[in-house]
Image (cartoon, rainbow, N blue to C red; front, side, top):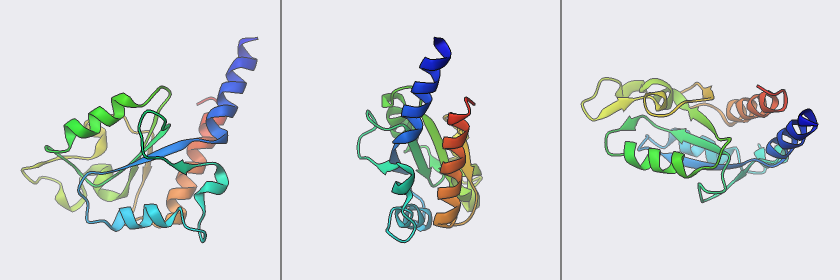
Length: 146
């Protein structure tokens, strides 16, 4: 009986995950590519992923840019408002490890310095295809029970 419940929960999570986008002050290259993944040309919504404006309904947190000291409290607040299970996607070199801003006095580094990251999408900026491929792999891992 438990396995059926787990299968139904995994199906519900992977059928229509909602995402929220958090820009922590990047150069906007990753933001443009993230928004481009929503356009009809790339259409991430065909996989059920929909960009949503509130963290209380979101399943996936998409973070772009290096985490600065000014943004850390806001990011933690958004992360804590999300219901479980929640998944974090770090988009771009800055979100993954600080990028060109690594070592600056006001920058903590990548997203993983503050919250756990489930998926890294490398690039500066990554193409929309890379973001879509990463999210599809994340959803496949959720379906598989990982």
